[in-house]
Image 1 (cartoon, helix red, strand yellow):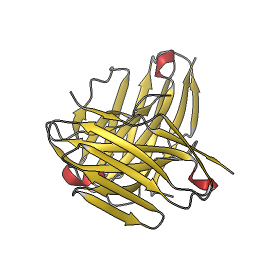
Image 2: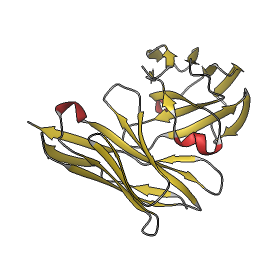
Image 3: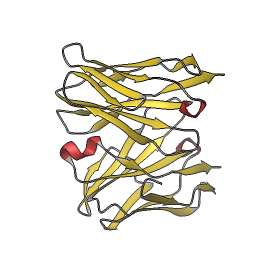
Image 4: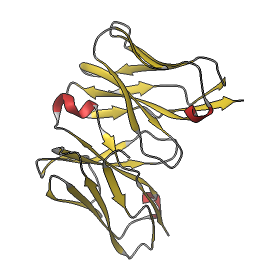
Length: 115
Length: 110
């Protein structure tokens, strides 16, 4: 257990569906991240939040919409996804940005399949 | 541009020693991190090197040479449970983003 939980662990959705991924961290961290992990590719940073404020949007399509209501919770809202969006979506947290980013704590991920 | 290179796969025998290399190219550099990820699991932080030299933590050690833009993860007394993917990561000095390598899949033979 890393102190970061994600739900659901697995998700199958059609291209017209709307769903949300949830992440919660119990570490008292201030920074939270969404990553996409596809086979044979490096981890791709999608979004970064620090103290609930979004600090990074890494050219992510608008069909992915993040929400951070407080420092402990992070959501990723999904709508009209494409089959190529099928991947493992990982949430992570760190104490802060800057040097603290280099030690991140990851959740177990949500395995997403878009049909 | 920024990049990290590490081998895609490495195979070693149980009880042996294995070294996983990582070379990086970034605009500025702070340090090199290593993460382990088992199949179906979350990446977990292993080590961080900001200075040249070897850092030892139990069976795992990590080395950094800033002048060579190179580091490695050394795993000793390999156990079957060490079968996993290992990622190196750096924080780019230009935009402060963390960049991960593609990962090295470690196969351990009995």
